[in-house]
Image 1 (tube, rainbow, N blue to C red):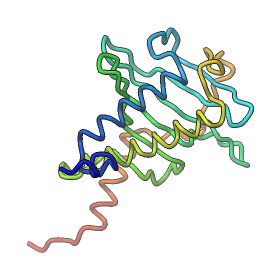
Image 2: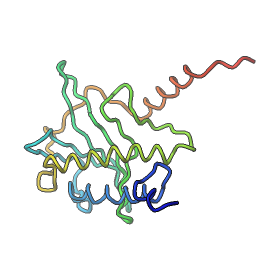
Image 3: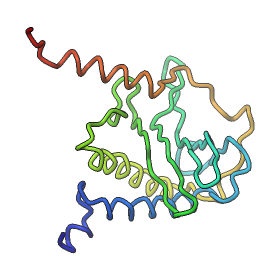
Image 4: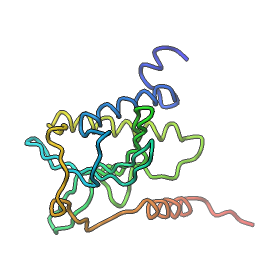
Length: 185
C-alpha cells in the first residue's frame, strides 16, 4: 500500500480507519471528559448552535456506549433525534467508533446496520467520516467541555418518534426483498 493511500484514508484501509477512531476519541474527550462519566445524561448549550445531548447507554470495564444527538422539534411539535449517533468508546486503546448513525432521516437512514461482509470496512468509513465531520462542526460551534454538564431530567426532551435499530434492520430487509427479482422454482 502506498503512503499516499494511507494519508488520504481510502475506504479499504483498515489502519487509517483506526487512526480516525483515535482522532474521534481525542475530539470526544475535548467535548466531554470520557474518564469521568458519572451520570447518564449530559447537555451542552453553545451560543452558536443547538443544544447537544449525550446519553451514556452502556458502561463496561473498557468500553462505553454513547449516544450523541440533537433533539429537533418540527412545526407539528414532534421531537426527533437528528442527527443521532451511537459511539463505542474504547478506553484502553483511546479510540471511539461510530456504530450507528442516523444523519437526519427517521424513515430512511443513510447508514443502516445490515452490511454485507465484503463492505464492512467501507461501511465503517462512511459512518466514521460523518462522525468526524460532525465532531469538528460541534467544536467549531462552541461545544466543548466547559459547555457540557449533567442534564436535569426536565432538560432531556422526550422523543415523539423513536426509531430503534431493530426496526431499521427489518425495514432494510423488507426493501431488499422487494427489490430482489423473484426466483422461479
